[in-house]
Each structure stands twice: as structure tokens, then as C-alpha cells.
Picture 1 (tube, rainbow, N blue to C red):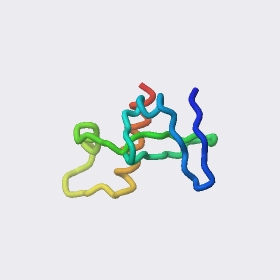
Picture 2 (cartoon, rainbow, N blue to C red):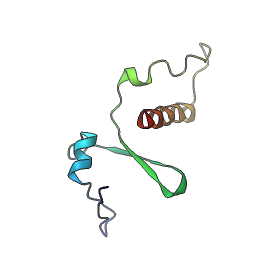
Picture 3 (cartoon, rainbow, N blue to C red):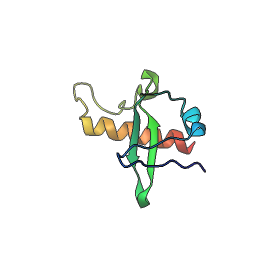
Picture 4 (tube, one colour):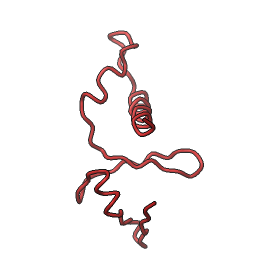
Length: 84
């Protein structure tokens, strides 16, 4: 388990082991996804096109997905990837 410290300005230091694990560099964006029981999933903003390709195959052509539906599908895929 690694810990970070929250500054008075709301900034947090991410431990080196975690930065290395996420393969992130200075100024890269992270995504914070609130989960149940006070937990938060932290992931990188980087997405490959192949990681989201075909997630809406069940939808008929001509029916665009809403932004909420796309965000929900991306979050579900991230959670599945982490649990695998």
C-alpha cells in the first residue's frame, strides 16, 4: 500500500511506485472515478482507439449514443480491465 499527502492547496503527491505503475509523467491528466464506500478509481486519461472499438455494436446505425452512455461504457470497460 502506498500513501500520498494532500496539501493545503488540494494537491496530492503520487508515490513513485504508483507513477511508475500508471506510466505517467509530470502534467499528464488523471481520471478520478468515485466508487462505492468512499473508494476512488484513479486511471490515466490515455485511451487507445482499439480499447473502445465496438462497444456499441448492439446499437442500430443512425442512433448516436449520448455522452452519458459513452462515459458509462468507458467506465465499465475500465473497471472490467482493472478487475481482470
